[in-house]
Image (cartoon, rainbow, N blue to C red; front, side, top):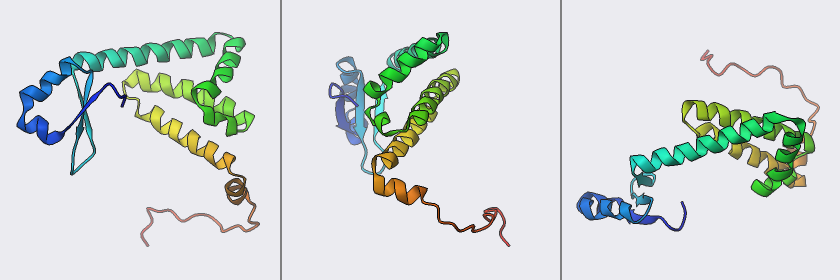
Length: 159
């Protein structure tokens, strides 16, 4: 959440709801801190719709650019390290796979109006880059143990 957003305790919303809600005229969002759960973000429906419109427009432009011609794909690959510095740790083939998956996942998420899958995909790729950035961890995770432990048991089988 950016620095220009206000933060209040959830109890302030409950106890002084009119004054707290009036702050939405000054800031796009209110961060509501909760003691017993995850913090919440309060915004207006208009602002939420505007945010979704911007994300959707950016997604459609990125997807259209990436599919336009091979030069556009090269441009996308060239700008990825600026947007996601950790891609520098990925092998070249993985950078290509990440770029394609990013565009496809963004388009699919936009089509249903839920960006959670994009966030999950970005986190997974970032963790992959973290593994590649650490030679000791990479060696441990890619080491051939020369042992076949056989098929994994079906976790649904309770016998």
